Length: 108
Image 1 (cartoon, rainbow, N blue to C red):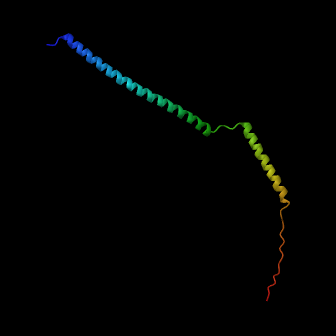
Image 2 (image 1 turned 180 degrees about the vertical axis):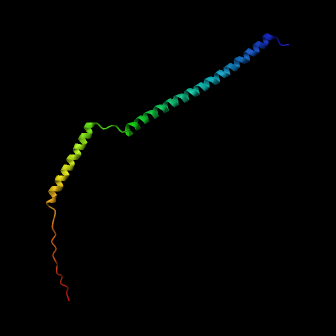
Image 3 (image 1 turned 45 degrees about the horizontal axis):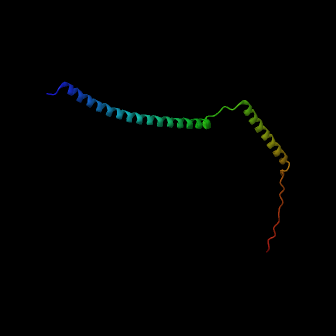
């Protein structure tokens, strides 16, 4: 016959070994999960930074009134200069054509 106090000692020893093994497993799992979390946070940070750069380049910003006014004024000034250049060169254009008949002597 096995005495009850001996069974309690064996049971306690078995439970102690089981708990140590479970603790080791849980600590290993915790380390893996923490590593995955850190990797995910790093990836999220890099993705957020990339998104900010893309939005900065791609999102159209509203043009201010002053910049639009200046751009249109510069365009009008350029068109006026082009008109002046074309008007001054128009006097140099030939308006009439003169046709002369050229006689060709062909040797016989």
